[in-house]
Length: 366
Image 1 (cartoon, one colour):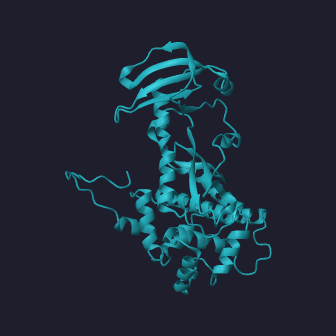
Image 2 (tube, rainbow, N blue to C red; image 1 turned 45 degrees about the vertical axis):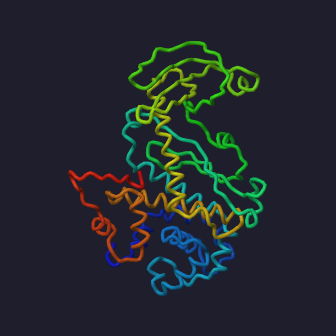
Image 3 (cartoon, helix red, strand yellow; image 1 turned 60 degrees about the vertical axis):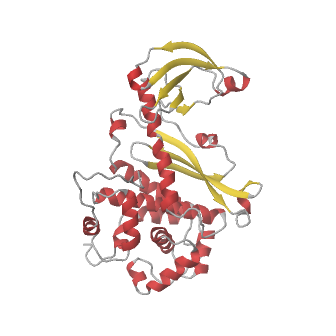
């Protein structure tokens, strides 16, 4: 029963404890640890993400202010700034990475699939990276430009359910092609990407198109020039497309020579979900101001943010919440210590439908 338990405690029920304990043992997380366990560290980082704490000092001050209520959050004792800082600096970030990947693997099975992609009866992934700026004086190991530091989060997103299945944090100078070498492609995999304006190619064959779908042309091509030909020596397909909503002209390259041109355009449009994922975690989670300056501390905080993102998705699915993830996260940030059943909490905050009312103001989260 969840009666009398805080919202935070109910949220933590979604954590796979066995997977976390296995990861702690795998990377010797409790080696030379007396009081502050890996679970305490994880709960502190989750608390900081959900309540919007922007620094280590602020997080510890808020936890101290909770007093005995820390126990209801699952944190067993008082937390000092030096203890939490040392844990983030020294405890292997892979403990939290493995926990996040275990949560992702279980959540992918349960989440609803995008209707348009479900009709294709095939897996679809978006691969991209986002750059996170860092202060070069505080993070000298992350030298990016002359006076700027930074890291990259290379991400492979399952477009069918909108959840990352691969994420690696690297130096900001690392090329996106590096991530391709870290991924094992599935059988029958093919790619779709945007074509550059100055692409040098020769046309081998022209395919008929249906203008009603927005496709202008569909051609089989071969790349020309010593540099281009070396990148991909076989036949490619170049599709020109006009977005019916925005009128924007796009050119797609793919090595799939049989898929309908309109389907190629659909798959690339669905790729926008990875941009929305990057936007969401940067707006709602704290991955810009870091609690530690070492590479391990930075990666620990990023994986803690991913864990919170998956927790929000799991919470929405388990309780069939009507709110979108943005609203769920905002409500959690204000009610995390209330002793209310989660389902009742979100039922009370559900917005009524105003039929016939026209909203002229655009939604901030669309």
